[in-house]
Length: 97
Image (cartoon, rainbow, N blue to C red; front, side, top):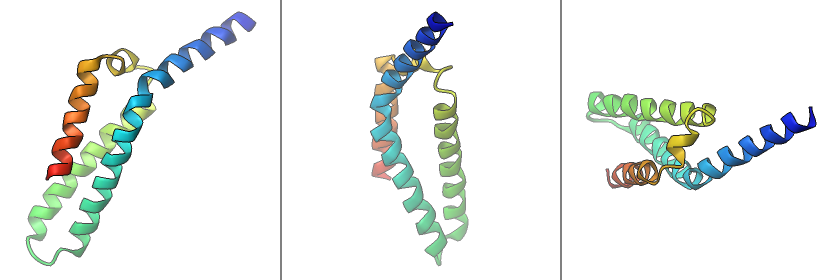
């Protein structure tokens, strides 16, 4: 049993190591999502356009939540530098708009 426990800890450490670089990006994404939702709630004009934007942003938030919940399933992707660059680019575009 001790061997199994050691293997599980090693696997957990790898996943934590894989997702660790994404944590600051996820934090930025969540802050931007909150700002967009707040803007929607205070919007007086173009409420329909804002509502569509909030809907899409919420889908993004759900995808991020799924990534965090299922990080063990995505470990291979999270370790891929191209995946990280794409996520970083997504945050950059998100910030710009």
